[in-house]
Image 1 (cartoon, rainbow, N blue to C red):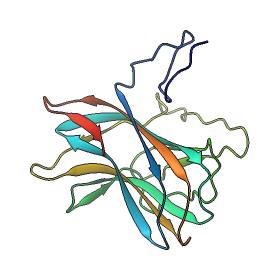
Image 2 (image 1 turned 90 degrees about the horizontal axis):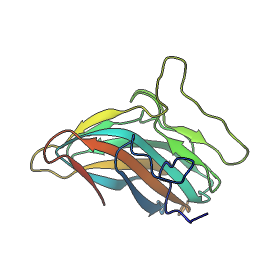
Image 3 (image 1 turned 180 degrees about the horizontal axis):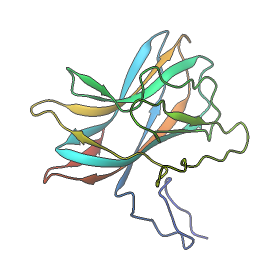
Length: 177
């Protein structure tokens, strides 16, 4: 079996599935020290529909990581992508997954790798991820960010973030920060 690169969705023949659209990934090391930290992940141009947003813990996270959420930031105003009271990620094991699979009023979901897990959409949903549309503010840098709070001094750990999307405007695109 050939080796594959990244967490691209694949079929039984290891071919990349395209129903989510293009997928970008960006690895970040958590280094906050007794603070709330906003980590820029992807820069937006134009308008896009995000079809999936998630992160995979690649190095176990520090003992005190709380209030983790995703937001859109145009450097003046921030809009929640998931609820800003967040989810606790304290000591999340490598292999754990953080998923945006509900509305912006819902917290991101932590699928801990501390044991096997099954996570599926509710009977009212048709897809696992919750798609959403984002629009760039003209003449401003607009970014998808991951925000977390820590009381560690400093915290530790690493997460590889992924975003899948489709452009909706002629200049619609996302780029890795």
